Image (cartoon, rainbow, N blue to C red; front, side, top):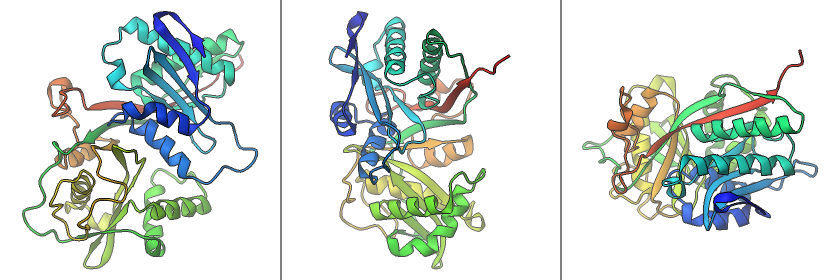
Amino acid sequence: MTMKPEGLRFVRFPGAADMIEALQPYDDGFMNGTLGTLYDNLKLPSPPEGSGEAYYMAIYRGSDILLTLAAAPTDRAWGLGCPQTAMSDIPPAVFKEAIDLLAKSAIEITHPLAVNKLYGEKGTVDAFFHSWVDAAASKGTRLRINDPLLDTRASYATPQSVTSPPSTTPHYRIFRATGDDFAELFPMYLDFTNTGGRTQSLDVEEAHLRFVLDLGNSWLCRVDNALAGFIVLGRSTPKTIAIRHVYVAPEHRRKGIAEGLVRAINRYYLGVRPVGYEGFPEDDPPVGVKSFICLNAIDAAAENIYRRAGFLFPLRTADEEAAGGRDPITGRKAWQQSVLRGVEPEPVP
């Protein structure tokens, strides 16, 4: 543990379960990426012997967690978390101190090229990498920050924001997916994952789909008994769950299916009855009723769909701060820009 001015201290947790316990007071719509990933990692098979080391770190101010930085051996990137409830009244100078302490402490227990990819809120990621580059330079390694690999906007839906069920019976039906649906679903799932070029082997894709089907939080949509689309959820915490993937087959697009899938999922997992869509059970979800459903959107068209289903994305206007995007209960901003960004060694002249 490292102490700094402003009552800041660096803590490295022994394991994912310890970090999960510490983060329980921050289980909300903005911490699902961090906390939900930790929960997911506990469900994954143990990594093969010889896999990389896991890191679970945080910066405290008194008893409040300001920042978290975590990576498990199976993670594709490090995750940077920033609880809004703790950061809402922090002066910019203290935030900078916290970022610097996290970068300097993390580089001491890893190495300058360890945090090569990082996902989180854009401003926090950018600030961390500037501190990381400075810390690496003090150790003789010159790094440069790359352009974002992924740039999304994250928001959430709540029981108060979720929209009404359809006034007429939809022309499609929605069902929970099971392992028995694997053979039919896998080709469509590959169409989805191949968007932008496949980055994983078929064996890895198959294993991942079987894993998510076993979790019981995937749903299929059928039109006249033909598979038309699917929705996959994950990162379940006591209060949140995330929509990970939404996909509708090309021949069934522009028919309201994606919006219907998302609206149905919102109502079901947030406990807002009636769900209004055929195929949903009467009892509560096996993972429990949630307070927030979280989601990342990659473009304005997707945001429009999700907003109509209850997500708190603002309208994309010149003044987004005045165009919605506020939590109906707290009044706080209910969305953020999130990026996946990396660093690499500066080229040798």
